[in-house]
Length: 144
Image (cartoon, rainbow, N blue to C red; front, side, top):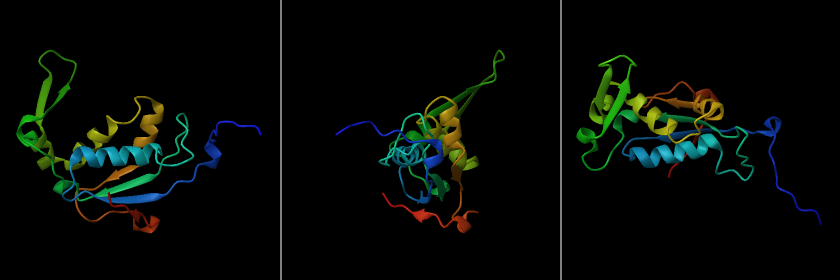
């Protein structure tokens, strides 16, 4: 009997729509679950070089939780490239002004740092409130 490793092809990828409710969930633990879904790691057909993940819709991101004193102590840095162009923002400020950006940052840092990771991140839809625009796709509610 011949044994071989299964390699998925782009043509054979079957994508689903899944929905996560972020209310009361811890930021890092939710980001890990979302990254797994986007990469397709939970599927038996997982192939590292093929984009075989699912579409993910996340709602209620404004009500996400963090542990400890991260709200005041965790700092996100951006630099414009010019002298004196360092910008610092705490997690609390980002959560107030743009909560969607917070989850996008957490998930994007868990995905591959190449074209494959960029393509996977385009399938993530994040909404601050309970309403979303993807009811027509009938996303499957996922609890973890």
